[in-house]
Amino acid sequence: MERSEIVAELTKIFRKTFQNDKISIDEQTTPSDLKEWDSLNHAQLIYAIEKHFIIKFNLKEMVKFNSVGQICDGIEVKIKL
Amino acid sequence: MQFNSFYFLLFFTAIILFYYLIPNKNYQRTFLIATSLFFVFQANYLSLLVICLIAILNYFFGIGIETKKNNFAGKFIFYLAILINISNLFFFKYYDFFLENLSGFLGLFNFKNPPQVLKLILPIGISFYTFQILGYLIDIWQENLKPEKDILVFLNYVFFFPKLLAGPIERAQNFFPQAKESKYILLSNFSAGGKLLIWGFFQKLVIADRIAIYVDSVYHNFDQHSGITLLVCSVLYVFQVYADFSGYTDIARGLAKILGYDLMINFRRPLLAFSITDFWRRWHISLSSWVNDYIYMPLSLKFRAIGKAGVFIALFVSFIIVGIWHGAKWTFVVFGVLQGIFLVVELMTLRKKKKLATKIPAWILNGAGLLMTFILITVSLIFFRSPSLKIALSVFAKININGKLFLGTASFFLYSLIGILILMMHDICLEIFKKDIFKFKSDYFILRGFPYAMLVIIILMIGVFDGGQFIYFNF
Image (cartoon, rainbow over all chains, first blue to last red; front, side):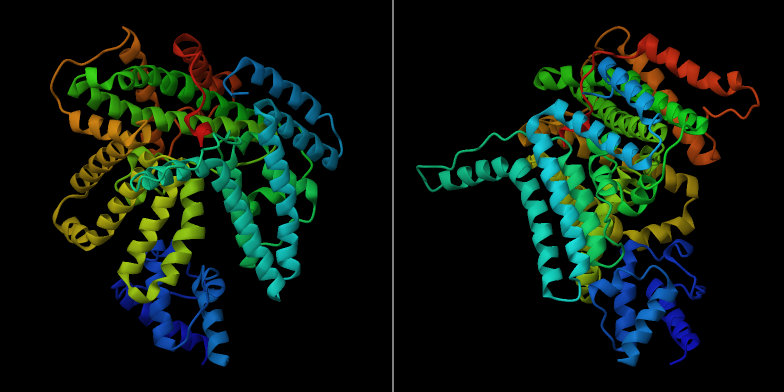
């Protein structure tokens, strides 16, 4: 899967999880860029990503997810396995 | 040795004189470590022994976790390190509380030989440096940080006396780079540090210690006081805790700044919070962010499959830990439980609040949020202040707007209100206009220094100089 495709899929997941169709993300997007992406919603976002890509992250991987780019890195590793 | 003592003033002056005469950064660090250890030694020998043992053990634990991270030994060292640090904190802070409650429980079954409490002295700063070290070890384990191999840098991180007694709970990522630099006399550091010291002492001596006299006298025989007195006392206590702890943090940051270090900000105008969620992003930030990163986030991720229920559990557990961290009393447990309940209710009603926001003007909604948050914090802090659950519940039950208000000494209300007004004006201007009312832009030193000179005069005129120690030193 291309990186751009992952970001496109993640955009859909972000919009669905945060119930906001106007959300636009790129690899540099971090929680400080989106008011909905806070510590109360972060776990639900990760779970939605896991369900969508049919992957499972461990805790060490998840605590590193501080940007969309880092999430893409994590997804790429899991998809390649 | 308290920060607000003449002895400390002499001590710190002597430190600065020698510190900046030392040309070599290793000798500077060694001097700072020796100074910090002397500071601990002034408290008691046990505190010195415990902190030295813990620091040395954890220095080697950190390196061991990194060196052996790819095999079982690394995992073993990590979990052993966590166990030793938590056990150390549990033993000194919670063992007697645990035994007393166990005895009470066993007494229900007529158990004849209850275990004896040890009446242990609490080593100073143990709650703060334990959490600091735990964060350091977890960051190494999660590969967010490399262990510090320079023992002088690591020991400075653990012992650094401005933050030792009551935080902030510093992150290694923020402290280590600063600890590796040579420190030189910089006028900007002395100026910024001096301003923090003045503001910190104003909060402590003019506001916190003055209100403390009134609050202590009311709590001393609370059952003799009217409902209105208990209400006013509870509200004033909110300002006392805020000014006391924020004042301590500013003094700690000011001392650190003069020594060439920037410690993290611990308060960001918490009494202007619109919700309990917002409050905990502004109050004791070093603790709330620590609990968020090392307890709430892992728990919420662990329970992510059960949706919102997972978030609720994570929140609840996190804030029970926040409560217990403050002390080994049921009042602190209730304080934590209350925060958990408030946060869960806020989360559950978030959607309704968003709908209301489309119908009600923002200023009304924000005003209501501000008031509600203040009321909930006032209620929570009754449990924080009360020596027992029974007294907390009695005070809470007695609060009303009836009866005659106890005024204390003639000057009390006037001086307290002056202090609170200055504090809130400072916070409101920073919050709304992003301007610090004490910072004048001018080429003239006299004009720039004028607001701080006024603060010093107010401190000298109406400060309380025989007040008690900082509230958070007890934790």
